[in-house]
Length: 414
Image (cartoon, rainbow, N blue to C red; front, side, top):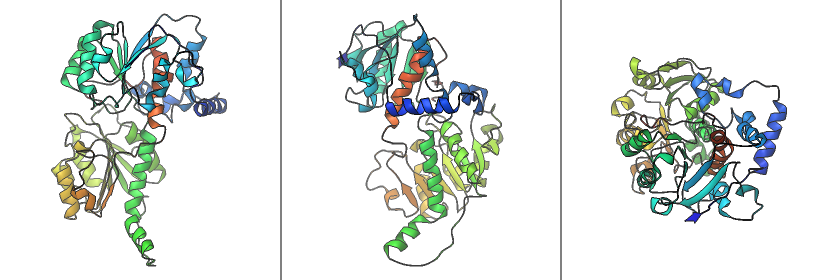
């Protein structure tokens, strides 16, 4: 465990590449309108998106720098592996007498400790912010223990991930309600790269890349017909940040977009041709009409096996299923059967029921499956950027007592 007491430090230029990009973006868009206003609902102003909010990034931090005094303080502990490199910008505040730009926090903030268990962090007093990294492998058990230790002093829990299934439990929901704790996450950091993967997967099957690569390996010159994405239909199950980022790219390629989401208040979006919801039997309708289906829904009690055997049976034989959300949202056994018997043309899978996928699992051998080890959002900086979002966006907003980005509905699980 690393413990730091009584330090309050000042943020200046965390990453040279990001600060220069930000300056360029601001110079180019000084007269532009609020980028967040382009989002598809009034509620979306609560949610951060790396691309759409790039030119307003750091506004709260700049405002904080101009304040002569601050009334609010952030007393932070990090429930993380102390050696987690992606938390370096936060954890390096433990180093004293350093000039490293990555070692400083926004004004009014202090890092009090880093550890992966409640036993390491629970004795620290007056903690009001907990930063949680997936590198804390037992966070689901440890986080409730920390909440009980900190009690009424704890105001805010921030997760360095978009998915919350690694910490979510009935006990945690009750504790957050009991102590009135707000939970936020890193939604909006990983959407664009997963959207790129989805389009790549569509093209992989549309252009029959397996055949192309096989012919190349055999030095075999044989022409064959390919499909185009233009005019085909992409159905998106879970039209959140990832789903919308995918729809944006797919629309540019001439695809028709169907979207299924539980929130029935959202009925229009410039990237979506039609919204479907549980009230109108929307999931089954989407499965019937789609040439490609993207599953980007979070895993909750309600979404477990949302795409079940019945839903899968409604897909057209030429359809392709793409899953970037969570493995158990799809009935994996039923999907494998459909892939084996020709009722489903193909699947592109980045997530699975069990990870790592067992080496003897039939999915490894299926020729109509594109399989990746849950790494299609794993850019060299993706988790570092998620930490930077906490430091550069939400922490300044917390100090300034502004509304935090990316609130999580603990009852719903996302």
